Amino acid sequence: MNSTSQRELIFADKNISILPRLNFSIDDAVKEIKRHISIDSIFDKQTEIIIICTYSLLIICGIISNFIVSGIIVRKTRVCTTRYPYVVNLSISDLILCVFCMPFSLLSLIKKKWILGLTLCKLVPFVQGSTVFLSSATISAIAVDRHKNVLSSFPTGRRRKNNEVILTIFAVWSISFIISSPILYAQTIKKVGLLHFYTYEKCIEEWPWGNAKGLYTVVIVLVQFLIPTLVLIITHLRIESHLNYASSRYNESSTRPSEERVQKERLRNRRATFILLMISAVFSITWLPWNIFNLIADFYPDCMSVENLYLGFVICHMIAMTSTTTNPILYGWFNSNIRREILNVKEKITHVISNKKRSDRRNSRSKFSDSKL
Image (cartoon, rainbow, N blue to C red):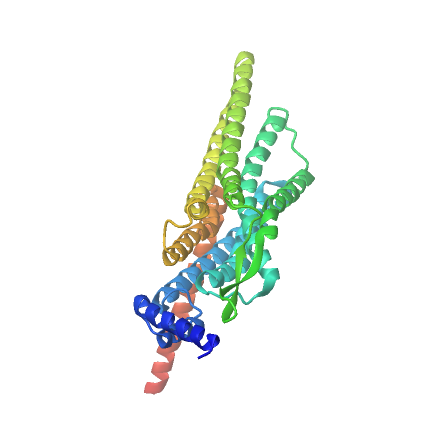
């Protein structure tokens, strides 16, 4: 027997001796690989249906609530002369999340393969990150805008120019895109699987060094939570200080109408700050699990199984996406003008439905009487 045949036999013997330790045969291994190839879903069918239904509900609720608030603002107010453009800006960012980001994010979370190409692989996370930063920056911009308006218009009565609001919104969008730009660099498509046998494309993040993703997540947390909270607190305290100064000055000159105006402005400031703090707090709470889970996955990737990792990402992402509904609900309900219009719309819808029911009942009665005749 030549040396080649001897080596083949030795190799065969080694394989035979290894197989019992692995506790499956070559046929079993081939069957398992074929099964893995044929299944594209990450979760079982029941879990996948629950996830799809939940995302669908979030998308529908987000679209309806944001359209209602935006429609009321555009229809009932002169947008260019108020702070309502910022609210419309919040609604636009939420609508982008609902219409563009959530469907593609759902696909990437429940399917192993990415079939939508490199452009969407980069664009979807980038747009999602931009809209998140946009929401935080818009809340801060509302607080700063109110601060400037109170300090410049009280007690002189001078108002800021309308084009400043448009410029601020443009700046907010630009800053959000700049902060999210590292995502465009990091997102890429990579082939995973069994090399030379079975591979598929996966949309993943690939950062230049090990802790880069973790550091960027820390920056996201600071920009999302810490900066808006500090801005809200600082602007609120400065407005209160300015109003106290104005109140003491008017008290000395005994000008009662101006003092009443100061008290009214103080109440408006506290109510506006409360609304913004509520929106910021709820927004932070909804996105906090997603960011914490990302930090855990970045710094301690081996602390859980792959299945639990995917399930954790899905749950945290669904919690984060509830912000698309909470933003319009909170601002719409706590803002007295918008709440009044929402209730008027509700009354009109209820009136139309009741009229339709009465009309249907009358038609059914007339048909019944005709049939008897």
